[in-house]
Length: 337
Length: 263
Image (cartoon, rainbow over all chains, first blue to last red):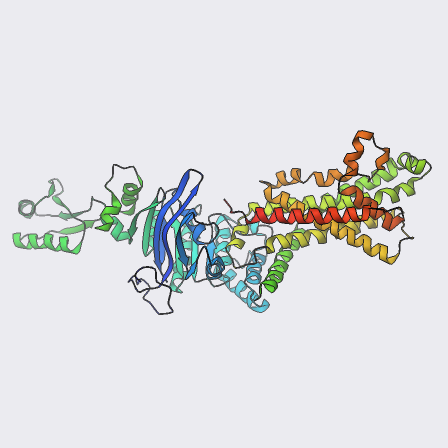
Protein backbone atom coordinates (compact mmCIF):
# COMPACT_ATOMS: atom_id res chain seq x y z
CA UNK A 1 0.00 0.00 0.00
CA UNK A 2 2.57 2.50 -1.07
CA UNK A 3 1.12 5.51 -2.82
CA UNK A 4 -2.64 5.20 -2.75
CA UNK A 5 -3.16 5.35 0.98
CA UNK A 6 -6.38 6.62 2.43
CA UNK A 7 -6.13 9.74 4.55
CA UNK A 8 -5.69 8.90 8.19
CA UNK A 9 -6.34 11.23 11.05
CA UNK A 10 -2.76 11.44 12.16
CA UNK A 11 -0.61 14.49 12.70
CA UNK A 12 1.97 14.84 9.99
CA UNK A 13 4.78 17.29 9.46
CA UNK A 14 3.65 19.86 6.93
CA UNK A 15 6.19 18.97 4.32
CA UNK A 16 5.98 15.30 5.10
CA UNK A 17 6.16 13.31 1.94
CA UNK A 18 6.93 9.82 3.14
CA UNK A 19 4.91 6.96 1.77
CA UNK A 20 2.93 6.81 4.99
CA UNK A 21 1.67 10.41 4.89
CA UNK A 22 -2.01 10.79 3.98
CA UNK A 23 -2.67 12.07 0.50
CA UNK A 24 -5.19 14.89 0.22
CA UNK A 25 -5.30 14.44 -3.52
CA UNK A 26 -4.11 11.50 -5.53
CA UNK A 27 -4.61 10.63 -9.14
CA UNK A 28 -3.46 7.84 -11.38
CA UNK A 29 -3.49 8.00 -15.15
CA UNK A 30 -6.05 10.81 -15.49
CA UNK A 31 -7.11 11.32 -19.07
CA UNK A 32 -9.47 13.71 -20.74
CA UNK A 33 -10.01 14.63 -24.32
CA UNK A 34 -12.42 16.91 -26.12
CA UNK A 35 -13.09 15.39 -29.51
CA UNK A 36 -9.73 14.68 -31.12
CA UNK A 37 -7.87 16.94 -28.77
CA UNK A 38 -6.26 15.16 -25.84
CA UNK A 39 -6.12 17.61 -22.98
CA UNK A 40 -4.83 15.31 -20.24
CA UNK A 41 -2.80 12.35 -21.37
CA UNK A 42 -2.45 10.27 -18.24
CA UNK A 43 -1.31 12.29 -15.27
CA UNK A 44 -0.37 10.97 -11.83
CA UNK A 45 -0.50 13.17 -8.79
CA UNK A 46 0.01 12.72 -5.10
CA UNK A 47 -0.39 15.67 -2.79
CA UNK A 48 0.26 15.16 0.92
CA UNK A 49 -2.22 16.66 3.34
CA UNK A 50 -1.29 20.15 4.46
CA UNK A 51 1.07 20.91 1.62
CA UNK A 52 0.93 23.37 -1.25
CA UNK A 53 1.09 21.87 -4.69
CA UNK A 54 1.51 23.95 -7.81
CA UNK A 55 0.56 22.75 -11.25
CA UNK A 56 2.62 24.88 -13.53
CA UNK A 57 2.18 25.11 -17.23
CA UNK A 58 1.68 27.35 -20.23
CA UNK A 59 -1.77 28.31 -21.45
CA UNK A 60 -3.65 25.34 -22.80
CA UNK A 61 -1.50 22.78 -20.99
CA UNK A 62 -4.53 21.28 -19.27
CA UNK A 63 -4.22 22.87 -15.83
CA UNK A 64 -7.83 24.01 -15.64
CA UNK A 65 -9.07 20.66 -16.93
CA UNK A 66 -7.15 18.91 -14.13
CA UNK A 67 -8.77 21.21 -11.55
CA UNK A 68 -12.20 20.67 -13.07
CA UNK A 69 -11.85 16.91 -12.84
CA UNK A 70 -10.48 16.91 -9.30
CA UNK A 71 -13.21 19.31 -8.15
CA UNK A 72 -15.94 17.08 -9.70
CA UNK A 73 -17.02 19.72 -12.21
CA UNK A 74 -16.34 17.36 -15.11
CA UNK A 75 -15.61 13.65 -15.39
CA UNK A 76 -12.37 12.09 -16.57
CA UNK A 77 -12.27 9.79 -19.59
CA UNK A 78 -9.79 7.48 -17.91
CA UNK A 79 -7.80 6.94 -14.77
CA UNK A 80 -8.95 7.54 -11.25
CA UNK A 81 -8.63 10.23 -8.65
CA UNK A 82 -9.27 10.51 -4.96
CA UNK A 83 -9.79 13.74 -3.12
CA UNK A 84 -10.05 13.75 0.66
CA UNK A 85 -10.39 9.98 0.52
CA UNK A 86 -13.36 10.02 -1.84
CA UNK A 87 -13.31 8.87 -5.42
CA UNK A 88 -14.24 11.79 -7.66
CA UNK A 89 -16.26 9.56 -9.99
CA UNK A 90 -18.17 7.39 -7.53
CA UNK A 91 -18.45 9.69 -4.53
CA UNK A 92 -18.50 13.26 -5.83
CA UNK A 93 -20.68 14.44 -2.93
CA UNK A 94 -17.99 13.35 -0.46
CA UNK A 95 -15.40 15.27 -2.42
CA UNK A 96 -17.60 18.37 -2.65
CA UNK A 97 -18.16 18.42 1.07
CA UNK A 98 -14.40 18.60 1.69
CA UNK A 99 -13.19 21.03 -0.95
CA UNK A 100 -13.38 24.67 -1.83
CA UNK A 101 -12.81 25.86 -5.37
CA UNK A 102 -11.87 29.24 -6.69
CA UNK A 103 -11.92 29.01 -10.44
CA UNK A 104 -10.09 31.05 -12.98
CA UNK A 105 -13.10 33.18 -13.71
CA UNK A 106 -14.76 34.97 -10.91
CA UNK A 107 -17.47 32.87 -9.30
CA UNK A 108 -19.31 35.60 -7.49
CA UNK A 109 -22.89 36.70 -8.06
CA UNK A 110 -22.42 40.18 -9.47
CA UNK A 111 -26.06 41.20 -9.02
CA UNK A 112 -25.99 41.00 -5.23
CA UNK A 113 -23.68 42.56 -2.67
CA UNK A 114 -20.49 41.07 -1.33
CA UNK A 115 -22.17 40.42 2.00
CA UNK A 116 -25.16 38.75 0.34
CA UNK A 117 -22.77 36.53 -1.61
CA UNK A 118 -21.17 35.45 1.66
CA UNK A 119 -24.53 34.83 3.36
CA UNK A 120 -25.59 32.80 0.33
CA UNK A 121 -22.57 30.56 0.85
CA UNK A 122 -23.32 30.28 4.56
CA UNK A 123 -26.89 29.20 3.75
CA UNK A 124 -25.70 26.64 1.22
CA UNK A 125 -23.34 25.24 3.83
CA UNK A 126 -26.33 25.05 6.17
CA UNK A 127 -24.74 27.16 8.84
CA UNK A 128 -27.14 28.43 11.50
CA UNK A 129 -28.17 32.06 10.83
CA UNK A 130 -26.06 33.53 13.61
CA UNK A 131 -22.98 31.56 12.74
CA UNK A 132 -23.41 32.48 9.09
CA UNK A 133 -23.45 36.16 9.97
CA UNK A 134 -20.40 35.78 12.20
CA UNK A 135 -18.38 33.90 9.59
CA UNK A 136 -19.41 36.45 6.96
CA UNK A 137 -18.35 39.39 9.09
CA UNK A 138 -15.04 37.75 10.01
CA UNK A 139 -14.11 36.81 6.47
CA UNK A 140 -15.13 40.18 5.02
CA UNK A 141 -12.96 41.82 7.66
CA UNK A 142 -10.05 39.45 6.99
CA UNK A 143 -10.16 40.09 3.27
CA UNK A 144 -10.51 43.81 3.68
CA UNK A 145 -13.98 43.93 2.17
CA UNK A 146 -15.99 45.26 5.11
CA UNK A 147 -16.26 48.69 3.57
CA UNK A 148 -17.50 47.34 0.25
CA UNK A 149 -19.75 44.73 1.85
CA UNK A 150 -23.00 46.50 0.97
CA UNK A 151 -22.08 47.24 -2.64
CA UNK A 152 -23.00 44.98 -5.56
CA UNK A 153 -20.13 42.63 -6.38
CA UNK A 154 -20.26 43.72 -10.02
CA UNK A 155 -18.83 47.09 -8.94
CA UNK A 156 -15.74 45.51 -7.36
CA UNK A 157 -12.26 45.80 -8.85
CA UNK A 158 -10.51 42.66 -10.13
CA UNK A 159 -8.54 42.25 -6.92
CA UNK A 160 -11.62 42.74 -4.74
CA UNK A 161 -13.59 40.21 -6.75
CA UNK A 162 -10.79 37.68 -6.35
CA UNK A 163 -10.71 38.32 -2.60
CA UNK A 164 -14.46 37.94 -2.34
CA UNK A 165 -14.20 34.78 -4.40
CA UNK A 166 -11.69 33.25 -1.99
CA UNK A 167 -13.63 34.48 1.03
CA UNK A 168 -16.70 32.69 -0.35
CA UNK A 169 -14.64 29.55 -0.85
CA UNK A 170 -13.60 29.65 2.80
CA UNK A 171 -17.11 29.90 4.26
CA UNK A 172 -17.45 26.15 4.67
CA UNK A 173 -13.93 25.77 6.14
CA UNK A 174 -12.78 23.39 3.39
CA UNK A 175 -9.75 21.21 4.14
CA UNK A 176 -8.61 21.18 0.53
CA UNK A 177 -8.67 24.27 -1.64
CA UNK A 178 -8.28 24.43 -5.38
CA UNK A 179 -7.11 27.75 -6.74
CA UNK A 180 -7.07 27.96 -10.51
CA UNK A 181 -4.70 30.75 -11.51
CA UNK A 182 -5.54 32.83 -8.44
CA UNK A 183 -3.40 35.79 -9.45
CA UNK A 184 -3.88 35.92 -13.21
CA UNK A 185 -4.86 39.44 -14.15
CA UNK A 186 -4.04 40.95 -10.78
CA UNK A 187 -1.73 43.91 -10.34
CA UNK A 188 1.53 43.31 -8.42
CA UNK A 189 0.18 44.54 -5.11
CA UNK A 190 -2.95 42.40 -5.31
CA UNK A 191 -0.79 39.47 -6.32
CA UNK A 192 1.38 39.83 -3.25
CA UNK A 193 -1.72 40.17 -1.09
CA UNK A 194 -3.01 36.96 -2.61
CA UNK A 195 0.23 35.20 -1.83
CA UNK A 196 -0.10 36.32 1.76
CA UNK A 197 -3.64 34.95 1.87
CA UNK A 198 -2.51 31.60 0.48
CA UNK A 199 0.34 31.35 2.99
CA UNK A 200 -2.11 32.07 5.77
CA UNK A 201 -4.37 29.27 4.62
CA UNK A 202 -1.48 26.86 4.58
CA UNK A 203 -0.44 27.83 8.07
CA UNK A 204 -3.90 26.73 9.17
CA UNK A 205 -3.25 23.27 7.79
CA UNK A 206 -5.29 23.56 4.62
CA UNK A 207 -4.04 21.65 1.58
CA UNK A 208 -3.73 23.96 -1.40
CA UNK A 209 -3.77 22.84 -5.01
CA UNK A 210 -2.90 25.77 -7.16
CA UNK A 211 -2.35 26.26 -10.85
CA UNK A 212 -0.28 29.04 -12.23
CA UNK A 213 1.61 30.09 -15.27
CA UNK A 214 3.98 32.16 -13.17
CA UNK A 215 7.15 30.40 -12.14
CA UNK A 216 7.84 32.95 -9.48
CA UNK A 217 4.52 32.17 -7.89
CA UNK A 218 5.13 28.43 -7.81
CA UNK A 219 8.60 29.08 -6.42
CA UNK A 220 7.20 31.37 -3.71
CA UNK A 221 4.33 29.23 -2.55
CA UNK A 222 4.60 25.60 -3.42
CA UNK A 223 6.16 22.71 -1.57
CA UNK A 224 6.07 20.69 -4.73
CA UNK A 225 5.66 21.71 -8.33
CA UNK A 226 4.58 19.69 -11.30
CA UNK A 227 5.20 21.05 -14.76
CA UNK A 228 2.33 20.20 -17.04
CA UNK A 229 2.96 20.31 -20.74
CA UNK A 230 0.79 18.97 -23.54
CA UNK A 231 -1.34 17.04 -21.09
CA UNK A 232 1.56 15.26 -19.41
CA UNK A 233 3.56 15.92 -16.29
CA UNK A 234 6.94 16.85 -17.73
CA UNK A 235 8.65 16.99 -14.33
CA UNK A 236 7.77 17.04 -10.68
CA UNK A 237 9.66 17.99 -7.57
CA UNK A 238 10.51 20.86 -5.29
CA UNK A 239 11.51 24.09 -6.97
CA UNK A 240 15.15 23.30 -6.21
CA UNK A 241 14.93 19.78 -7.52
CA UNK A 242 13.47 21.08 -10.74
CA UNK A 243 16.17 23.68 -11.08
CA UNK A 244 18.84 21.02 -10.68
CA UNK A 245 17.41 18.95 -13.51
CA UNK A 246 18.51 21.40 -16.08
CA UNK A 247 22.12 21.67 -17.16
CA UNK A 248 23.64 25.11 -16.91
CA UNK A 249 24.25 25.34 -13.18
CA UNK A 250 27.74 26.29 -12.14
CA UNK A 251 29.89 27.46 -9.27
CA UNK A 252 31.63 30.76 -9.77
CA UNK A 253 34.84 31.58 -7.94
CA UNK A 254 36.14 35.12 -7.94
CA UNK A 255 39.62 36.19 -6.97
CA UNK A 256 41.30 39.51 -6.30
CA UNK A 257 44.84 38.08 -6.31
CA UNK A 258 45.97 37.20 -9.89
CA UNK A 259 48.45 34.64 -8.52
CA UNK A 260 45.76 32.79 -6.60
CA UNK A 261 43.56 32.98 -9.71
CA UNK A 262 46.26 31.39 -11.85
CA UNK A 263 47.01 28.57 -9.47
CA UNK A 264 43.32 27.83 -8.97
CA UNK A 265 42.81 27.81 -12.74
CA UNK A 266 45.54 25.25 -13.19
CA UNK A 267 44.53 23.18 -10.16
CA UNK A 268 40.82 22.81 -10.90
CA UNK A 269 39.52 20.65 -13.71
CA UNK A 270 36.96 21.68 -16.34
CA UNK A 271 37.02 25.37 -15.60
CA UNK A 272 35.99 28.20 -17.83
CA UNK A 273 38.29 31.16 -17.34
CA UNK A 274 37.27 34.77 -17.24
CA UNK A 275 40.70 36.45 -17.09
CA UNK A 276 39.35 39.95 -17.08
CA UNK A 277 37.39 39.66 -13.86
CA UNK A 278 39.59 36.93 -12.40
CA UNK A 279 36.68 34.53 -12.16
CA UNK A 280 36.37 30.81 -12.78
CA UNK A 281 33.24 28.90 -13.64
CA UNK A 282 33.00 25.24 -12.77
CA UNK A 283 30.00 23.27 -14.05
CA UNK A 284 28.05 21.93 -11.11
CA UNK A 285 24.57 20.91 -10.14
CA UNK A 286 25.04 22.85 -6.91
CA UNK A 287 24.81 19.75 -4.75
CA UNK A 288 26.64 19.50 -1.46
CA UNK A 289 28.89 16.73 -2.76
CA UNK A 290 30.10 18.73 -5.74
CA UNK A 291 30.61 21.84 -3.66
CA UNK A 292 32.66 19.89 -1.16
CA UNK A 293 34.89 18.46 -3.88
CA UNK A 294 35.50 21.93 -5.28
CA UNK A 295 36.41 23.19 -1.82
CA UNK A 296 38.69 20.18 -1.34
CA UNK A 297 40.47 20.96 -4.61
CA UNK A 298 40.97 24.54 -3.50
CA UNK A 299 42.27 23.45 -0.09
CA UNK A 300 44.64 20.96 -1.70
CA UNK A 301 45.95 23.65 -4.03
CA UNK A 302 46.29 26.04 -1.08
CA UNK A 303 44.28 28.87 -2.67
CA UNK A 304 41.40 30.81 -1.26
CA UNK A 305 38.69 32.37 -3.38
CA UNK A 306 37.37 35.76 -2.40
CA UNK A 307 33.85 34.93 -3.41
CA UNK A 308 32.01 31.72 -4.13
CA UNK A 309 28.56 31.73 -5.64
CA UNK A 310 26.34 28.86 -6.71
CA UNK A 311 24.28 29.53 -9.78
CA UNK A 312 21.35 27.20 -10.26
CA UNK A 313 19.17 27.74 -13.28
CA UNK A 314 16.04 29.56 -12.22
CA UNK A 315 12.59 28.18 -12.82
CA UNK A 316 12.35 30.14 -16.03
CA UNK A 317 15.16 28.04 -17.48
CA UNK A 318 13.49 24.89 -16.24
CA UNK A 319 10.14 25.90 -17.59
CA UNK A 320 11.37 26.75 -21.04
CA UNK A 321 13.53 23.63 -21.18
CA UNK A 322 10.62 21.43 -20.17
CA UNK A 323 7.86 23.00 -22.18
CA UNK A 324 9.61 23.71 -25.47
CA UNK A 325 10.17 21.33 -28.36
CA UNK A 326 11.74 17.88 -28.46
CA UNK A 327 15.31 19.04 -28.92
CA UNK A 328 15.66 19.37 -25.17
CA UNK A 329 16.95 16.58 -22.96
CA UNK A 330 14.10 14.40 -21.79
CA UNK A 331 13.37 15.85 -18.38
CA UNK A 332 11.28 13.04 -17.00
CA UNK A 333 14.19 10.65 -17.44
CA UNK A 334 16.35 13.14 -15.68
CA UNK A 335 13.83 13.33 -12.92
CA UNK A 336 13.73 9.60 -12.52
CA UNK A 337 17.45 9.46 -12.01
CA UNK B 1 -29.73 15.69 6.38
CA UNK B 2 -32.18 13.66 4.31
CA UNK B 3 -32.15 14.29 0.62
CA UNK B 4 -35.65 15.79 0.63
CA UNK B 5 -34.93 18.30 3.36
CA UNK B 6 -31.63 19.12 1.64
CA UNK B 7 -33.55 19.76 -1.56
CA UNK B 8 -36.10 21.99 0.20
CA UNK B 9 -33.46 23.92 2.10
CA UNK B 10 -31.11 24.51 -0.84
CA UNK B 11 -33.97 25.30 -3.21
CA UNK B 12 -35.35 27.91 -0.85
CA UNK B 13 -31.87 29.43 -0.57
CA UNK B 14 -31.68 29.61 -4.37
CA UNK B 15 -35.22 31.03 -4.48
CA UNK B 16 -34.19 33.78 -2.06
CA UNK B 17 -31.24 34.56 -4.31
CA UNK B 18 -33.50 34.87 -7.36
CA UNK B 19 -36.05 37.02 -5.57
CA UNK B 20 -33.18 39.23 -4.42
CA UNK B 21 -32.17 39.67 -8.07
CA UNK B 22 -35.74 40.69 -8.96
CA UNK B 23 -35.91 43.13 -6.07
CA UNK B 24 -32.51 44.62 -6.90
CA UNK B 25 -33.15 44.87 -10.63
CA UNK B 26 -36.89 45.31 -11.11
CA UNK B 27 -36.50 46.95 -14.53
CA UNK B 28 -36.46 43.66 -16.45
CA UNK B 29 -39.67 42.52 -14.77
CA UNK B 30 -41.36 45.90 -15.16
CA UNK B 31 -40.42 46.15 -18.84
CA UNK B 32 -41.98 42.78 -19.50
CA UNK B 33 -45.06 43.83 -17.55
CA UNK B 34 -45.40 46.89 -19.75
CA UNK B 35 -46.28 44.97 -22.93
CA UNK B 36 -49.46 43.29 -21.65
CA UNK B 37 -50.66 46.50 -20.03
CA UNK B 38 -50.04 48.51 -23.20
CA UNK B 39 -51.75 45.84 -25.30
CA UNK B 40 -54.70 45.82 -22.91
CA UNK B 41 -55.15 49.59 -23.09
CA UNK B 42 -54.54 49.67 -26.85
CA UNK B 43 -57.05 46.97 -27.66
CA UNK B 44 -59.69 48.25 -25.28
CA UNK B 45 -59.48 51.99 -25.90
CA UNK B 46 -58.15 52.25 -29.45
CA UNK B 47 -59.51 49.16 -31.17
CA UNK B 48 -62.19 48.25 -28.64
CA UNK B 49 -65.25 49.67 -30.41
CA UNK B 50 -64.47 48.13 -33.78
CA UNK B 51 -63.24 44.81 -32.37
CA UNK B 52 -66.21 44.53 -30.03
CA UNK B 53 -68.58 45.10 -32.92
CA UNK B 54 -67.34 41.86 -34.46
CA UNK B 55 -68.07 39.74 -31.41
CA UNK B 56 -71.18 37.65 -30.84
CA UNK B 57 -72.53 38.41 -34.30
CA UNK B 58 -72.09 42.12 -33.68
CA UNK B 59 -73.31 44.49 -31.05
CA UNK B 60 -70.83 43.91 -28.25
CA UNK B 61 -69.32 47.08 -26.85
CA UNK B 62 -65.99 48.08 -25.52
CA UNK B 63 -66.52 46.73 -22.00
CA UNK B 64 -67.64 43.36 -23.38
CA UNK B 65 -64.52 43.32 -25.52
CA UNK B 66 -62.45 44.01 -22.38
CA UNK B 67 -63.98 40.94 -20.78
CA UNK B 68 -63.30 38.97 -23.93
CA UNK B 69 -59.58 39.75 -24.17
CA UNK B 70 -58.64 39.77 -20.49
CA UNK B 71 -58.01 35.98 -20.23
CA UNK B 72 -55.70 36.24 -23.24
CA UNK B 73 -53.97 39.28 -21.80
CA UNK B 74 -53.37 37.42 -18.54
CA UNK B 75 -51.76 34.50 -20.37
CA UNK B 76 -49.73 36.95 -22.42
CA UNK B 77 -48.56 38.40 -19.12
CA UNK B 78 -47.39 34.98 -18.01
CA UNK B 79 -45.67 34.38 -21.36
CA UNK B 80 -43.89 37.72 -21.10
CA UNK B 81 -42.78 37.11 -17.54
CA UNK B 82 -41.28 33.76 -18.47
CA UNK B 83 -39.22 35.46 -21.20
CA UNK B 84 -37.60 37.23 -18.28
CA UNK B 85 -37.03 33.82 -16.70
CA UNK B 86 -35.27 32.54 -19.82
CA UNK B 87 -33.09 35.66 -19.85
CA UNK B 88 -32.14 35.39 -16.19
CA UNK B 89 -31.39 31.66 -16.46
CA UNK B 90 -29.15 32.34 -19.47
CA UNK B 91 -27.48 35.19 -17.58
CA UNK B 92 -26.92 32.90 -14.63
CA UNK B 93 -25.31 30.22 -16.77
CA UNK B 94 -22.75 32.65 -18.12
CA UNK B 95 -21.67 33.47 -14.56
CA UNK B 96 -18.97 31.53 -12.77
CA UNK B 97 -21.18 31.15 -9.71
CA UNK B 98 -23.02 28.20 -11.27
CA UNK B 99 -19.69 26.36 -11.56
CA UNK B 100 -19.16 27.13 -7.88
CA UNK B 101 -22.55 25.64 -6.98
CA UNK B 102 -21.66 22.52 -8.95
CA UNK B 103 -18.53 21.96 -6.86
CA UNK B 104 -20.39 22.41 -3.58
CA UNK B 105 -22.35 19.81 -1.66
CA UNK B 106 -25.56 21.49 -2.75
CA UNK B 107 -28.70 19.71 -3.92
CA UNK B 108 -28.21 19.31 -7.65
CA UNK B 109 -31.61 20.52 -8.80
CA UNK B 110 -31.87 23.43 -6.39
CA UNK B 111 -30.53 25.99 -8.88
CA UNK B 112 -33.31 25.22 -11.36
CA UNK B 113 -36.01 24.72 -8.74
CA UNK B 114 -35.14 28.12 -7.29
CA UNK B 115 -35.55 29.70 -10.72
CA UNK B 116 -38.83 27.90 -11.36
CA UNK B 117 -40.51 28.79 -8.07
CA UNK B 118 -39.25 32.35 -8.35
CA UNK B 119 -40.62 32.60 -11.87
CA UNK B 120 -44.05 31.18 -10.98
CA UNK B 121 -44.32 33.65 -8.09
CA UNK B 122 -43.36 36.47 -10.45
CA UNK B 123 -45.92 35.32 -13.01
CA UNK B 124 -48.68 35.32 -10.40
CA UNK B 125 -47.67 38.75 -9.10
CA UNK B 126 -47.70 40.06 -12.67
CA UNK B 127 -51.13 38.53 -13.28
CA UNK B 128 -52.46 40.25 -10.16
CA UNK B 129 -51.02 43.61 -11.28
CA UNK B 130 -52.39 43.37 -14.83
CA UNK B 131 -55.69 42.08 -13.43
CA UNK B 132 -55.84 45.10 -11.17
CA UNK B 133 -55.39 47.40 -14.18
CA UNK B 134 -58.23 45.56 -15.91
CA UNK B 135 -60.48 45.98 -12.89
CA UNK B 136 -59.56 49.65 -12.73
CA UNK B 137 -60.73 50.17 -16.33
CA UNK B 138 -63.97 48.33 -15.75
CA UNK B 139 -63.49 44.56 -15.88
CA UNK B 140 -66.03 42.72 -13.74
CA UNK B 141 -66.55 38.99 -13.30
CA UNK B 142 -69.36 39.07 -10.80
CA UNK B 143 -70.98 35.87 -12.01
CA UNK B 144 -68.00 33.65 -11.20
CA UNK B 145 -68.36 31.52 -8.06
CA UNK B 146 -65.62 31.10 -5.46
CA UNK B 147 -64.82 27.67 -6.87
CA UNK B 148 -64.48 29.13 -10.35
CA UNK B 149 -62.10 31.78 -9.05
CA UNK B 150 -60.01 29.12 -7.34
CA UNK B 151 -59.97 26.99 -10.49
CA UNK B 152 -58.99 30.05 -12.55
CA UNK B 153 -56.15 30.81 -10.17
CA UNK B 154 -55.09 27.16 -10.30
CA UNK B 155 -55.09 27.18 -14.09
CA UNK B 156 -53.02 30.38 -14.19
CA UNK B 157 -50.54 28.76 -11.79
CA UNK B 158 -50.36 25.62 -13.90
CA UNK B 159 -49.79 27.65 -17.07
CA UNK B 160 -47.08 29.62 -15.27
CA UNK B 161 -45.36 26.40 -14.20
CA UNK B 162 -45.51 24.90 -17.69
CA UNK B 163 -44.25 27.99 -19.50
CA UNK B 164 -41.57 28.51 -16.85
CA UNK B 165 -40.05 25.06 -17.34
CA UNK B 166 -40.01 25.61 -21.10
CA UNK B 167 -38.43 29.03 -20.58
CA UNK B 168 -35.81 27.55 -18.24
CA UNK B 169 -34.86 25.05 -20.95
CA UNK B 170 -34.67 27.86 -23.51
CA UNK B 171 -32.48 29.86 -21.16
CA UNK B 172 -30.18 26.90 -20.59
CA UNK B 173 -29.56 26.23 -24.28
CA UNK B 174 -29.09 29.90 -25.17
CA UNK B 175 -25.48 31.04 -25.35
CA UNK B 176 -26.28 34.47 -23.90
CA UNK B 177 -29.16 36.56 -22.51
CA UNK B 178 -29.92 38.14 -25.92
CA UNK B 179 -30.22 34.71 -27.47
CA UNK B 180 -32.50 33.61 -24.65
CA UNK B 181 -34.76 36.60 -25.20
CA UNK B 182 -35.08 35.70 -28.90
CA UNK B 183 -35.55 31.99 -28.28
CA UNK B 184 -38.30 32.66 -25.75
CA UNK B 185 -40.22 35.02 -28.06
CA UNK B 186 -42.81 32.34 -29.01
CA UNK B 187 -44.02 32.44 -25.41
CA UNK B 188 -45.33 35.91 -26.10
CA UNK B 189 -46.15 35.52 -29.79
CA UNK B 190 -48.27 32.38 -29.47
CA UNK B 191 -50.95 34.11 -27.37
CA UNK B 192 -51.24 36.79 -30.09
CA UNK B 193 -52.20 34.14 -32.66
CA UNK B 194 -54.58 32.31 -30.34
CA UNK B 195 -58.19 33.09 -29.56
CA UNK B 196 -56.99 35.89 -27.26
CA UNK B 197 -58.22 38.84 -29.34
CA UNK B 198 -60.62 37.38 -31.90
CA UNK B 199 -62.54 34.11 -31.97
CA UNK B 200 -60.86 31.34 -33.93
CA UNK B 201 -63.76 31.00 -36.37
CA UNK B 202 -63.33 34.64 -37.36
CA UNK B 203 -59.84 33.83 -38.69
CA UNK B 204 -59.02 32.74 -42.28
CA UNK B 205 -59.65 29.04 -42.77
CA UNK B 206 -56.02 28.08 -43.38
CA UNK B 207 -54.98 29.82 -40.18
CA UNK B 208 -57.57 28.31 -37.90
CA UNK B 209 -55.62 25.10 -37.15
CA UNK B 210 -52.63 27.18 -36.00
CA UNK B 211 -54.83 29.05 -33.56
CA UNK B 212 -56.77 25.97 -32.58
CA UNK B 213 -54.01 23.45 -31.92
CA UNK B 214 -51.73 25.39 -29.63
CA UNK B 215 -51.65 25.54 -25.86
CA UNK B 216 -52.93 29.09 -25.37
CA UNK B 217 -56.30 28.73 -27.05
CA UNK B 218 -57.71 25.99 -24.79
CA UNK B 219 -56.24 27.73 -21.72
CA UNK B 220 -57.85 31.03 -22.76
CA UNK B 221 -61.21 29.39 -23.50
CA UNK B 222 -61.15 27.64 -20.12
CA UNK B 223 -60.32 30.85 -18.30
CA UNK B 224 -63.11 32.64 -20.17
CA UNK B 225 -65.52 29.92 -19.15
CA UNK B 226 -64.50 30.10 -15.51
CA UNK B 227 -64.61 33.87 -15.21
CA UNK B 228 -67.34 34.81 -17.67
CA UNK B 229 -69.49 31.70 -17.84
CA UNK B 230 -68.96 30.81 -21.51
CA UNK B 231 -68.88 27.23 -22.73
CA UNK B 232 -65.70 25.37 -21.63
CA UNK B 233 -66.41 21.97 -23.16
CA UNK B 234 -63.36 19.85 -23.81
CA UNK B 235 -61.06 22.88 -23.47
CA UNK B 236 -60.64 22.34 -19.73
CA UNK B 237 -59.01 18.94 -20.08
CA UNK B 238 -57.14 20.04 -23.15
CA UNK B 239 -55.65 22.99 -21.28
CA UNK B 240 -54.61 20.84 -18.33
CA UNK B 241 -53.09 18.25 -20.67
CA UNK B 242 -51.13 20.90 -22.56
CA UNK B 243 -49.81 22.36 -19.31
CA UNK B 244 -48.81 19.05 -17.79
CA UNK B 245 -47.23 17.97 -21.06
CA UNK B 246 -45.24 21.18 -21.45
CA UNK B 247 -44.18 21.17 -17.81
CA UNK B 248 -42.91 17.59 -18.00
CA UNK B 249 -41.22 18.23 -21.33
CA UNK B 250 -39.59 21.42 -20.03
CA UNK B 251 -38.50 19.71 -16.85
CA UNK B 252 -36.89 16.72 -18.59
CA UNK B 253 -35.27 18.97 -21.18
CA UNK B 254 -33.93 21.46 -18.62
CA UNK B 255 -32.64 18.74 -16.35
CA UNK B 256 -30.78 16.96 -19.12
CA UNK B 257 -29.21 20.21 -20.35
CA UNK B 258 -28.25 21.27 -16.83
CA UNK B 259 -26.75 17.88 -15.99
CA UNK B 260 -24.69 17.93 -19.14
CA UNK B 261 -21.03 18.40 -18.43
CA UNK B 262 -20.03 22.06 -18.55
CA UNK B 263 -17.35 22.91 -21.07
